[in-house]
Structure formats: C-alpha cells, structure tokens
Figure 1 (cartoon, rainbow, N blue to C red):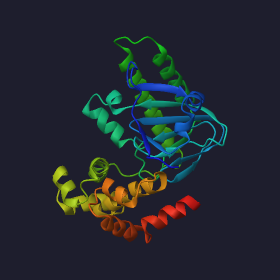
Figure 2: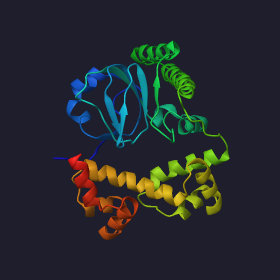
Figure 3: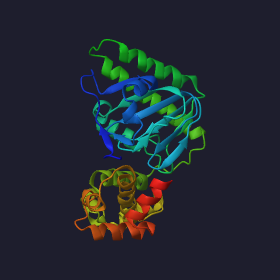
Figure 4: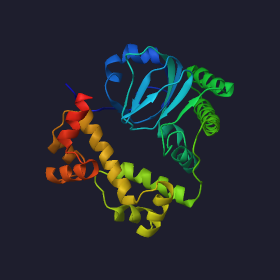
Length: 288
C-alpha cells in the first residue's frame, strides 16, 4: 500500500548540516525508505562511481552513466533503483549550511546544476580536479570540528560546484543568456515553489517582485517560453501528479492539500492540463 510521500529533514546531531555518506550505508540503514518515493529538505550531489542504474526524479527516468555526478534539488521526489547494483557516495547539505550571505543564496539559486531549466544535471567525471575536491571534502568532514571547519567545507563545496558547472557546460549544456530576464525568471520560480499552494494568481507574484504583469510575462516568455500563468499551472500539475502517483490520498484530500477548496475545482484544473481526470491518471500510472 502506498503511503504519503516521505519528506526528510537533515539529520540532527551533526557538527553542521553537511554530510558525505556511502550508498552502501544508505541501502543498509535506510533500505525501505529509499525504495519508496521520497523528498528531502536539502541538496544532494550523487556520485555514481560504479554501475549504471536508472534514477527516477519527478517522473523523469535518468539513465546513469558510470563515474558521473547527479545534482538533485531540494524537495524533488526521487526513487533509487534498488534492482541494479551500483556503488558511490552522496554529498548532502542545506541552505543553512551553505548560504551565509546574500551572495551565497544567489549563487546556489542561480546554479545551473540545481536549477537547469531544461533537464536534471548529470556530468561525466573526466576531470580529476572534481574527484580530488570531493575527496578533500570527505577528509575535512571527518576531522574534529574547530573554528575553521565550516568555512573550509563551504569553500571546498563551492569549488566543487564551480568545477562541476565548468564541466557541465562542456557536456551538451544549453546556455541561457544571463541577464535581468533570467534573474527575474529564477526569482519567480523560487517564489512559486514556496507559495503555489496558497497563491495561484500572477498578481501575487508581481506584488512580491514589485513588477507589472507585463514585465514578468516578458521575463518568463524569454527564459521559459511560457507565460507566468502557464508556469503556475505546470507547478501545480507536477505536485498533483506526485501526490496521485505516490500516495493513497483521496482526490478530495489531494485537492485540499493543493489549495483547492472544492474537489470539483481540482478535477477541472487537472483535466484542463492533461485531458484526463485525476482518477484516470492514477489508474494509468499504477498499470505502468
């Protein structure tokens, strides 16, 4: 029987909200948890050193290449491939750990690794600097905590992300022009992720961003090729599919969780986007 999508916060009791763990440890200690769809309140860098599993992220099956890094944004629903043997490690970290300044927040928010607008970021490790930096992080994280450790880990992590971005751009990444339109589109996306349940009108986001609807539409159309309303509808639809596919919540309860006061409004919204009712979508997914 499916349950609610489990959401995991960062482990308590660590010196800081940063950790490097082996996949073997994950499968030994949390075998049941990672075999089910789950989401986390932290960023994940998954290093698949051996094996070629298929990793599922928000309905996207990702064919993993050996010795590659996969970058998972916080709150993405993912599922490990427990039928395929593979080895590797994972870096886990939170906003609280990394974002000590406004510049840090902007860096992680604008990173093409966690915010690739076209795909989930995966890079082949052909650069020994990335492996070396990963190992430096692991060694430092095992040292006793002192006044320098957090800053050293943050600096090494930033270097790992910068080297990874460089490699990503060499490996078929479609570059988006970095301008004010991109900044506004990414800010809108961040606000939407935090507020889509309670706020589904474009006017709310315009007020929060101090923009006219016309200016926001210009930005999202340039970057996403969609209007703000289209993007809001797509975000609501993604969460709808997550809950329909991975939980046993009733249609009424899912509608309520997504901010629809009446089940009929949720059903109409879902069918308008997919040409299917929520019941039809759930039945088709369960048969797949």
